Length: 106
Image 1: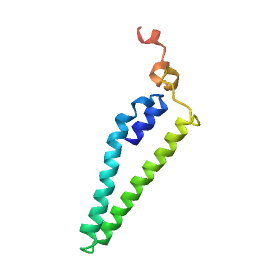
Image 2: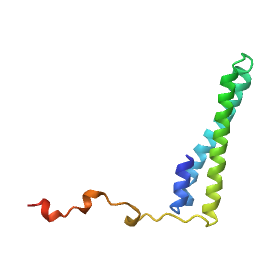
Image 3: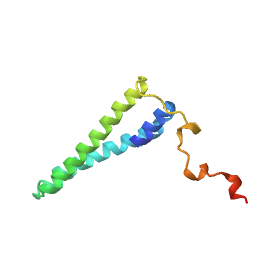
Image 4: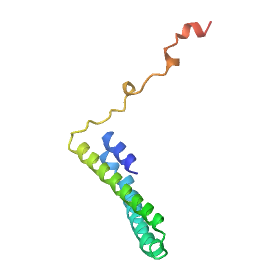
């Protein structure tokens, strides 16, 4: 969801980011709450410290990914990061397109 939001912003379609931001907010909230509840209610009482640490690492990684995405979004919205123009010049031509077609028809 964060990648799709970044793509929309880079394409200059900021009015559509709600389509990806709402589900991302839901996923962020449920992931953090479920991870916390899993650590506190399941892993620590049963002394499953490895699973508790892995869940905590996952929560930290989710927060870091979203924080970095927010940093990039602010950079795009402030104009520090250029927008991507969806034109043919941005795509790399494949090697097959460079073959002369007059030789293929003979």
